[in-house]
Image 1 (cartoon, rainbow, N blue to C red):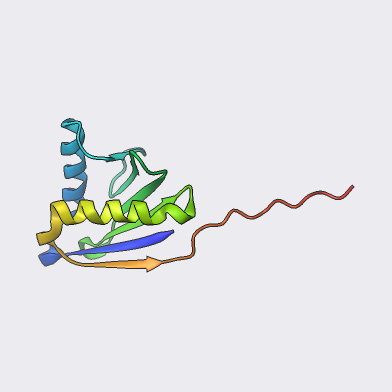
Image 2: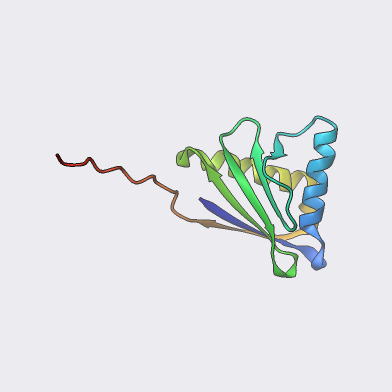
Length: 117
């Protein structure tokens, strides 16, 4: 799992702009990132058309956008991260002050123990 914090310039309402851009691209049948979860206030779950995994977006204090990048295949998370960074750069480069990435250990499913007989 990767955690990304996107800090906007001048208290710009970045979360609302990101969600609006995704809706705009969806209406035009363009873009590879789309909403995959229920519509909630200050939260969204997105998935990518080509990569297995999802992005959990949340509005934080100070209009900082917190994004959690998860993949079904932990060694493929970099592909989702690259797609996310490309989306942010293409559409919001002039509105972003900083992007912080925390490289947490990827989730590894624990092995199931066999029952002794």
